[in-house]
Image (tube, rainbow, N blue to C red; front, side, top):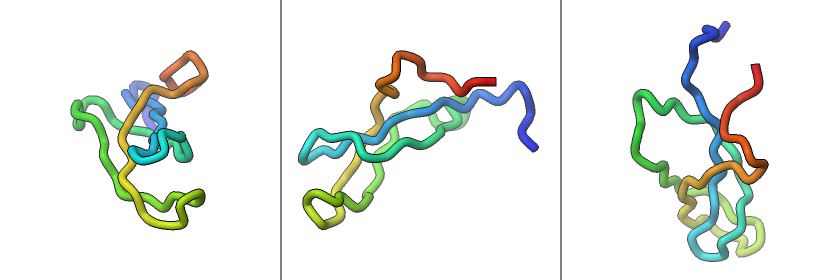
Length: 65
């Protein structure tokens, strides 16, 4: 079970080609301060493209306790 002092944040992954946010993930900001850049499947283009990290668009960037 996770500790109460986790520093994990919710981040959105936006496609670099289309600019649409398809994926959300959590990230430990203590160990990885740089932005994520992952290769994921884009259902609109039907191919794998690069996704980069952006803030979650709901106004908050932290997981509810």
